[in-house]
Amino acid sequence: MNISIVGSGYVGLVTGACFAELGNKVSCVDNDSKKIKGLAKGIIPIYEPGLKELILSNAKKKRIKFTSSIKEAVGASEVIFIAVGTPSLDNGEADLMGIENVARNIAINMQGYRLIVEKSTVPVETGQWVKHTIHSYIKHNIKFDVASNPEFLREGQAINDFMHPDRIVIGVESKKAKDILTSLYKPLNAPMVVTDINSAELIKHASNSFLAAKISFINAVARICDKVGADVVEVAQGMGLDKRIGRAFLNAGIGYGGSCFPKDLDAFIHISEKLGYDFSLLKAARGINQQQKAFFLNKIKDVLWIIKDKTIGVLGLAFKPNTDDIRSAPSLEIIKALQDEGAKIKIYDPQAQDKGKEVLSNVKFSKDAYALSRGCDCLIIMTEWDEFKELDLAKIKKLLKRPIIIDGRNIYEPRQMQKLGFHYVGIGRGRDSKK
Ligand code: UGA
Image (cartoon, rainbow, N blue to C red; front, side):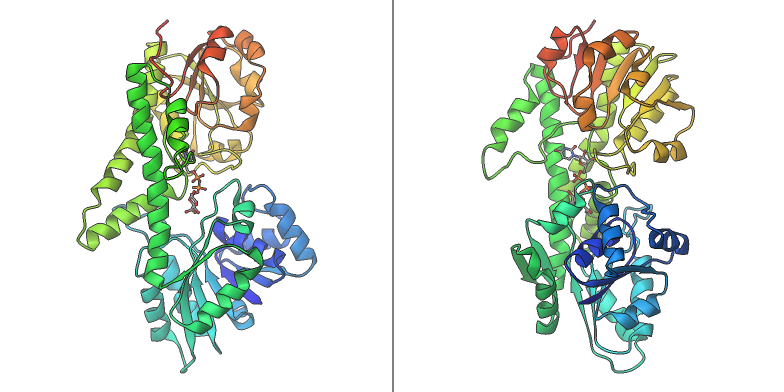
C-alpha cells in the first residue's frame, strides 16, 4: 500500500520504517525541513536500537522516503497516519493544535478517497473532531474515513514491539476502513481488536494509565517494605506469578518518566474532569510518582547527612534504558534538587549525555562508570542500563571516596553488595542501615 505518516517523531519514524519493512511504500512527512533533509541523508534524529538500519535498508529499496510536503504525501497515499506530538498544556490538557493543523492540511489537499488514521495518543472524541475538521475544509464532495489505531510501542524496544505486538487496536466507522487496516496489519499475525473510534482512543489512555498506576502501586508497597524490612523484589515476584496480576511493570524505583506516562495521565485526568468524573485513582497514582523522587532524595540524605560539597556520581540519565530520551526523566529533577543543596554532580549515561548537556548546567560528564566513580562520595543509580549490571564493582569500590551506592532501580542484590563491602541502599529492599 501507499502510506503516509505525518509526524516524523518517535512513533512516526518507527511506524514508517516498520510498514516499509512489511513491503509498503511509505512517505514520512514532517514540517521540520532540517529533520527531513537529515533523514534523507540517513541522519536519524533519535536513538532507537535497529531503527537506523531499518530506515537505511528500506530507503535503499525505495520503500521509504522523506518529505516536508504534506500535499505530495496526501496526493500519493490512500492511507494517511497522523503521528504528530500531543504535548501537555499547563493545565494538563493535551494540546491538539498539531492534530487539527494536519487534519486541515489533509482536507485541503485531498483529491480522492483517503483513510485518515490517528496514531498519536489523543483524548477520547478527538477522532470525531478530526472528522468534523476534514468535513469543514474539504473542497469537493470527496469521501473519506477517519480511524483510530493507537500505538503501544515502548522506547528502546520499539521495532520489536511494532513487529510483535500483543494486540492491534483498530477503531473504525466503516467496513472499507476496517478492511484497509486489517489487511495492512495482516502480515503481523497478531490479535486484533476492531471497535469504534471512541473505544479505541480510550483503550490507549486506559492502558497507559493502568500501567502507570501499577508502577505507583508497587512503589507504594516499596515504602512499606522499607519500614518493615521486607524485600519488594520478592513481593513483586510473589504477586506477579498470579496470572491475573503478572510480573511486568512491578519494578519499584524512582518513578515513571518519559514522554508518555506523565503526559497521558495528566490528559486522562483532565478529560475525565471535563466529562464530569473525578478520576481520583489516577490522581493518587500521579501523586505517588511525584513523591517517589523526594523519597529517593531522602534516602541519599539519610546516608550522606550533609549534601553540600559532596561529589555525587550519577549512573544513568535516560528515563529508561536503551534510549537517549530524557523527557520527564526522574533523574533530572533529582539532580536539580541535589544541586540546590550544593552537591557537585558527575554523570555517566551510555546514550543520553548529549541530551543531558542541553538541559543541565554545572555538571561534569564522564566517559564511563569508572571515570565517574573516581573521587565520588557516593554513586546513585537512576537508569538500569545493562552495562551497569556488569560493572567490576571491586574496581568501583576502590575508585570511590566512600563505598556507597544508592540504587534507584534495584539492579544489585543487597546481600551481595554488603559482602563486597558497600553501603548499599535500594528501593524497598528492607530497612536501610545507617553508617
Ligand atoms: C509507554 C508504554 O509502555 C507503551 O506501551 C506506550 O506505547 C508508550 O508509553 C506510549 O504511549 O507511546 P515508554 O514510555 O516508552 O512506553 O516506556 P515504558 O517501558 O512503559 O516505561 C515508562 C516509565 O516507567 C519509565 O520511566 C520506566 O523506568 C518506568 N517503569 C516501568 C518503572 O518504574 N517500573 C516498571 O516496572 C516499569
